[in-house]
Image (cartoon, rainbow, N blue to C red; front, side):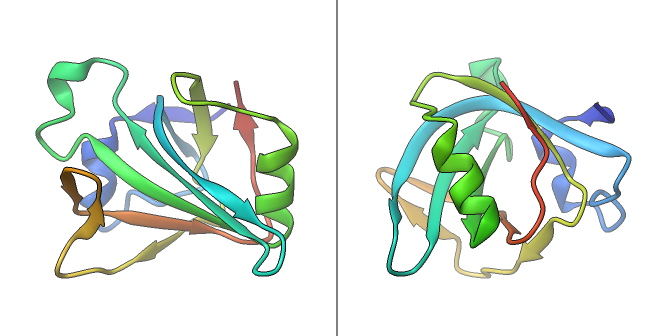
Length: 117
């Protein structure tokens, strides 16, 4: 697995390099949609004290990545490490609305996913 960087570092321009990965705890899961072939999670820093300062990211999985993620049968509370290889940043200037929280950053994986549980 590549070098692990904090979730809060994802906003840096060169953070989405193949040699980086993020580690966190799944705090929310959007269910898999077979029709749209997509699912999403809210990934937060393992240390809850770091979550308030850009320590959360919403991650979307589309197509083959969504199928691979769903087959792992992960649940809220699971700790995962996700390689940033082929990840794309999705800009959302208003912030992503999640229950009780606004998230500044969103990533997208569509055809490639390296995940360690």
